[in-house]
Each structure stands twice: as C-alpha cells, then as structure tokens.
Image (cartoon, rainbow, N blue to C red; front, side, top):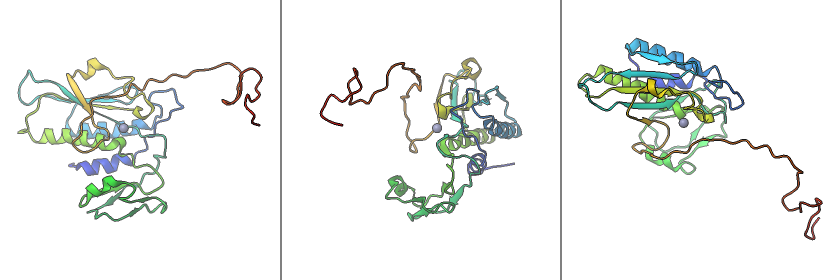
Length: 240
Ligand SMILES: [Zn+2]
C-alpha cells in the first residue's frame, strides 16, 4: 500500500510511546515497541531488510544504486515521546491551509495557539498544520523525523533514477530520557557518518550536541537554609 509521509505521521502519533524516566529497563516502557513493530511491518511490505534488538531499535539499509565506493550515510530519529505530557490517546488534527488564525484545541479550549505567542507560525501561512487536540502532546518530536526517514526510504526505493550510495536507518527508543544511543551497535550500523532528524527549523543543520550525562549525588549532613550559619542553625543577620 502506498502511504504519504503525512499518513505515516498521523499513524505513528496515535501510538503511545511515552518514555518512563523512573524505569531502569530498556526500553523504559514496553509500549515503545508497539511502534517498532508497526514500522518493521511497513519496511517488510516495502521489501526492506530490517533488524531490531531487545531495546526496540530499528536498523535498516538500502543498497547503493550507483556502484560501490560511496560513503555510507545514516539517518536517525527516536520513537519515544517526552514524559512531560501524556502520549495516550493522541488525536491529531489537520488544520488545512492555515491563514494565521488562532488555533483553539477542542479538548481543552484554554489551549490556544496564536502567532503572537508562537511567532514561528507567521512563516506557516498557506501550510497544512497538524496539532494535538489539547489534552496530550502531539509527539511530533520525534515521530515527524521517523515518518520522514521511513518515507524517504520508500521514495528512494521507488525512484531508481534518484542516485544514492548505501543509506542506513537508525530508529532508537528512550532518547527523551537521555538513553537514546545507549544500545547502538556501531558495527551493525556500519556507516561513515549520519544525520539526526529531530526538531529545528526547515533547512537548518546543527553540528554540536550535549552529552546527556547525568550524576546523582547523595549528600550526608545537616540541612539548613542557605541564609543561616552552619554552626547552630541560627540566622547570622538580624532577621527572624
Ligand atoms: Zn527529539
């Protein structure tokens, strides 16, 4: 079946893949693998060979159609969504041919998207916009990246006149809780370089990143307010 990138996106956002920062397992929530399974089926339908691992990652590749010796490039995105807002029962709404009007989200009418609050909307006049309905996140971070990569593979496969070297896909889980690359097998990925599709403006490329390292420090001692002296817990100024 032929899907558009929009079809894929609308399907993916309705799958709850919220990461769980309190879980030590990988993936942190088993439901992230629901989306892994859906995408593996789509890739199989296209005839693309793909592999997964116990964390729900997806590795896939398209062979070069213009001979050997070309660099191998990978495209990466993440399947999970942030735990800051519910990812359950997401109801995406397509606002066709946006003309700058306020967008009131119907399931919570206090949620209004205006171009005053979000100036970037001014650059989207005439576009079709997709939002959530007001009670959940949309999950565009990063299901838009996932949909683009899967559809790009479909397009390359069906347009043999489009020359490309070997192209790889890497979809991971738990990026939102800092574990997105914890289980990447670089030998299996086998690429020269790659790009992550995740946020940012159309046409922009970022070439720096933070490490996402985390430290948890337990301190044993006596708790005191910052304005109090350490010796006796009494204020050293004339305050109460
Ligand atoms: Zn992201």
